[in-house]
Image 1 (cartoon, rainbow, N blue to C red):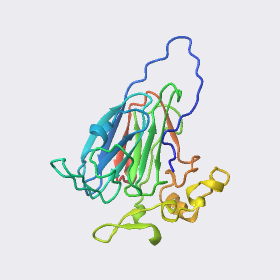
Image 2 (cartoon, rainbow, N blue to C red):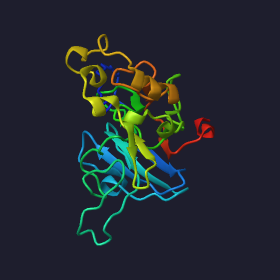
Image 3 (spheres, helix red, strand yellow):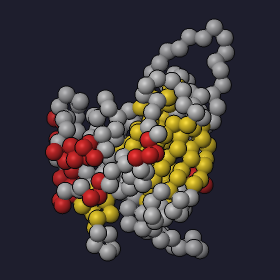
Length: 258
C-alpha cells in the first residue's frame, strides 16, 4: 500500500491574470549513516529520473543535490548492502531496497524500505507541495525530510523517522542480513497478508482499517511517519509553492529536526 505516492488534490483556483511561474524544487540528500547507502529515485508521473536517472551511491557524510520540475511526483528510498558490477554488464544486488539488481531504478524497491514521498506544486495541487515519510512498506533506514526556505502553514515542517526501528522490530517481522543482524523490519501486511493489516477487502477504508499492534510499534518509534495506509491525520505535510527545496537525511539525528 502507498500513502501519498501519486496523491492528487483537486483544487479550483481563480486568477485575475496569468498564474505565477513555479520554480524547480531542489532535493539535497545527506548520508549520516556510518555506512554507504545507494539512494533510489522513482518518478510517478513523468519519465524524468532524478538522481542520475534513478539511483546513485552516497558515502558516509556525503551530500548530493538534484532538481525536480513543478508537478513532479515520486519517491525516494535508501538501498543498503549493495554490490554492483563495475562494468555494468551483470545485475547487482542490495540487502534492502533492491530494485531488480539495477543501479538506476525503474521500478519500486523491494520491501521493506522506508520511503520519502512527494507531490510538488502544480496545476492539480494548487499552491502546495505534499510530502511524507512512510513505513507502510516496512523500514530499513531512518529518513528525515526538512523543508528549506520554507513557506506556508503549520504543516510545513520537519517529518521523518529518527528512531532505529530495527532495534524495536518484533521478531516475526525482522529481516536478517548476511552477518545475522537485523537490517530491516517488514510490515505486517507483507508477512501475514491479512486484510486488516493490508487495508484491503472488508478493511479497505479509513473507517474499517485501524491501527494494529504492529503498526503501533512503528508509530511509537516514529510519530510523524505513516505507520499504516490510512494514517493521514498526523503523517501528511504541506508547504506552499516557492519553498526552495527539501533536505533528505538518511540516519538522521534529533538535531536534524531544527
